[in-house]
Length: 216
Image (cartoon, rainbow, N blue to C red):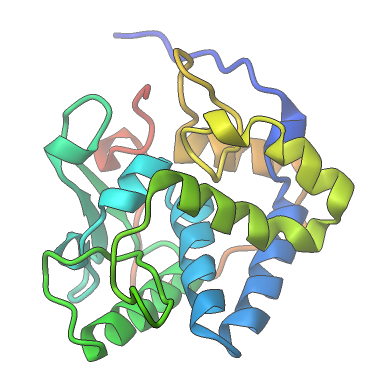
């Protein structure tokens, strides 16, 4: 039995639960007004609520977002993950994330996107639907964090050029990236301000069987 990984994290580089709730609420307001806001909301959801690395967000395709049926999930293909191992990220435990991902996927399909087109893409008129580079995804994430104020955003942006997972805003090259379960554990320690709402009629446990607690 392998020992549990020990995380050496700078708490200033992780959004607290209250900060995450603030970013999500502001992103939802902006999403109601523009496609750019909706796309940024999805980046925050994928990074903070699903634990995806920025490279995994960039490589995610429409066919990887499987939300129909009783076990909605994200499929991370072998060639897109750091360890070259496929993973499955369950979505049935978080109604808010599931609803936002489903709405964005429906919007992409309505735009005529194919199954192998990028899930997160540019929304500018001259390049709508094109894949975003990793640095562009990082910028969009930090843009969504503006609501936290200049000082807090600056502390997050201090390592933005070396960020592996924008949701964790912490790990540089050669360090272990933070898993979704590790981030959630830190958020639980930081604040109990926001409670997740489970999807009606759906149950699921977050654990190693779902690919969320492995060392990355």
